[in-house]
Amino acid sequence: MTNVEHQDAAARTSGLVLHGTARYYDFLAWLVMRGREGSFREKVVDLARVHPGDRVLDVGCGTGTLAIAAKERVGAAGTVHGIDPSPEMIIRARRKVRKAGVEVRLKQAIVEALPFDDESFDVVLSTLMLHHLPPKARQTCAREIRRVLKPGGRALVVDFGSSAKKKGLVGHLHRRHGSVKLDNIIDFLSQAGLNIVESGEMGMKDMQFVLATASDAERPGC
Image (cartoon, rainbow, N blue to C red; front, side):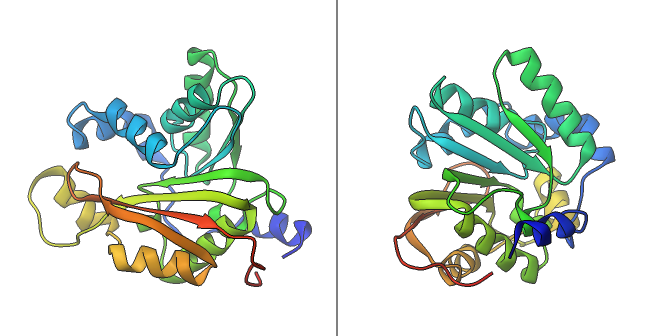
């Protein structure tokens, strides 16, 4: 897919875009994680093996909390980009970044057409975003993640893993937005040409993760 095609596609997404939710998203995350959001973000960065000097992309960055944590890990020698389809999320993320006093490059864009060149990033992060996409868009997202990863780069996907009926806030989120089975995440990433390294439970609610790497082999076509 050419850069022009990516720019044309950037105005469209088949996934759920959170507009009004942006104003209370951080509070919602705090409730879901019972105040352990800081620990969760650090665990995500650890699982992705983010190192000083890395170039990191956070897809579906929301209000920027994870992107800020990633920037603190990569240091001055590294760079962090965040994209989200919601302009309201990007506005709040920019405010949060300014308050934190770090440099994170934020842009309104969609995961089906990432506005970056091939092999641009050492790490791509996706947390609690994939369930907002229909199956076909998840496949496209996985191919885009593979495209922008450097050879040997790492992709970490974290999402809710059970659609079983649950009570409380997590149950409400599942009923409204859905979830993604671990095997399905593995399939999407594998079909995109990524090599699965590790997968399992996050140890928080029913969240799960898959870590994959990009090999030197030729990428599947866009």
